[in-house]
Length: 613
Ligand code: GTP
Ligand code: SPV
Ligand code: MN
Image 1 (tube, rainbow, N blue to C red):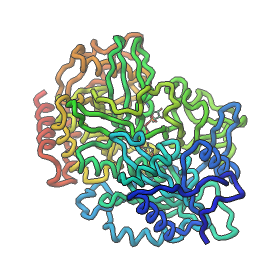
Image 2: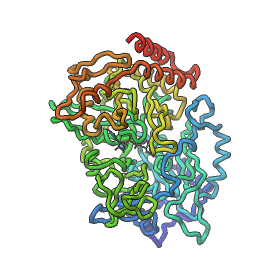
Image 3: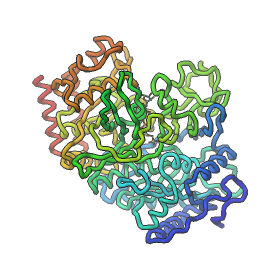
Image 4: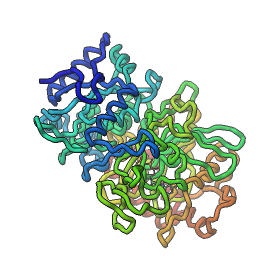
């Protein structure tokens, strides 16, 4: 028999009571929660209030039951390690579905099933899936509560790890429930790890199910996720809502939901510019968001590191917010020499997943320090020494931490900011130069639509394999990507002063396989050129693929990049670009007639420029 009475026996005692709100939306919310509980049959319902005390109690319970390992509070206060099931470490694009009424609306890049059919498939999985567990009801806001660009949602979940993560990544609280009760629209999201417990069953540290479904119903604004506890599959406010569902809202309402970081760049004269950048998963957004410039006088403030919502404003400009409240960042490669801001952000209050544990109760991952400790417990709980032939931390191990904790966070990071530039990038060993500027908005949209990038560990698949990832949104666009390209073109008519568009690539390699560009803090030299372009103070030369810097105009002082590497970083090989154009044509063809004519024309124009160069 289900009870809403608080448990008397554990750390969560005294938390979880149903809030009492009146209003047109209250009954609807209650009815929905009741309906999900009828289906999933939890032992108990806990309404999350979002207070710090409740968060602490939740963490205490997870430490007590073995879900989390507490780190040494002297070394890293209030910080914890979760080790996932070895098969539940990343997003699962093959198990992600966009169930629009019309298959064409999902497009060829998404898995699709008819909504009714998918409901028939997943209903039996959710039936009784929360038995023996607590169902948490988590009201959240993306963007500050009540903000002009913000959106609300509720996640029900049987994963306390997901609840704690949502608490760090979004704004959770009763003020959200109150807005919902008053009638503010909200998105329904349901999550179950798919591991019901029979009476007397012992639980495991990371419950999940071999069968996994991450399902979106864009027409009814719902997300249903089953079987996985991993961030992108379980924190439904993030990729499922803030990108897949929100991109559909953006299409219908005239705005953009993008896989972009958001920063403020301040030049030596104190002039500030806001820049958003779309790079695919594990391709450098968090790092650029926390950039510490190596060139004197420049500063970067962090506004967001993964998702940006953009709306046309009354002033003829685009305005952007970071809808999240935390960072769910890639751990490997994060160290003093690459991202010191992240290292400082992680001083405490962090939820780590799948990193290694040191013998003195702290964490470690590849790249945190140059040398690995002599002994570690790896992400799967096994003894590890530096001569092991496997990494100590999973390549997609992550940290979850409140954004406010970054020393680089802008004072006004919760407010909307006008957008001056948009960057598109990817992980490209060849062809794509360090930086190139679009000729205009339409060409910029073309650049975004042609982005390819080498696969990373952030999702399942072969790491390193080149694949298309237009606008870094391939796994996140909730509708037909050709329509999405069209939406971007249309957005160009919605502001008088559009952001300028650039393409960047920190990952070009020499024939010997080493990165030609030092990256990280040195990327400030590219940002410097981009900002000076906005100011009309830097030169560019037209090339077949866009405007390139005059190399002498890049600030390279104090940097040891050999001449020939620099030349290679900007080399435009006509044959490779014709081959690239051919691949783009084949990619466009997968969408058939739906690709906007303006982009086909851009492709023709690119070929003409390459041939006549
Ligand atoms: P998601 O959270 O998956 O969306 O990833 P992200 O785009 O925020 O990627 P992140 O900044 O976490 O970087 C991923 C990996 O790329 C890390 O291992 C970084 O160390 C590495 N990286 C980031 N910037 C650079 C760079 O400028 N050069 C090189 N060589 N590597 C970089
Ligand atoms: C990504 O994969 O792009 C991430 C991590 O930012 S996740 O939230 O898991 O999608
Ligand atoms: Mn991401």
